[in-house]
Length: 86
Figure 1 (cartoon, rainbow, N blue to C red):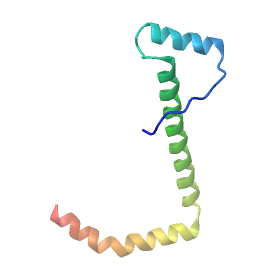
Figure 2: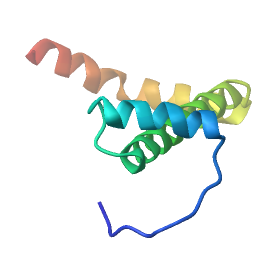
Figure 3: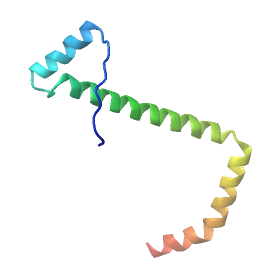
Figure 4: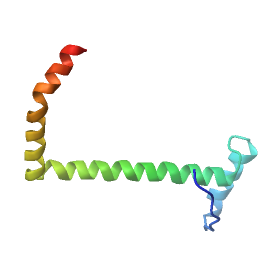
């Protein structure tokens, strides 16, 4: 992980209260840790959703699907050879 940079956020009081409870219960080391983990999880979710959307769009792209089919055909013999090795 690269260095940290301080930023300021405004969050609803009830959210801060919930984070405080987890810190006081020693479930999380700090509110900062909760915010960092939450953002990391959310960004990973966005990444997966973006990838899913791209795949769905690719399915409807005739040129992409033709290229994919051709590539799969080109590697078909090699794939069969690999299957027999394992």
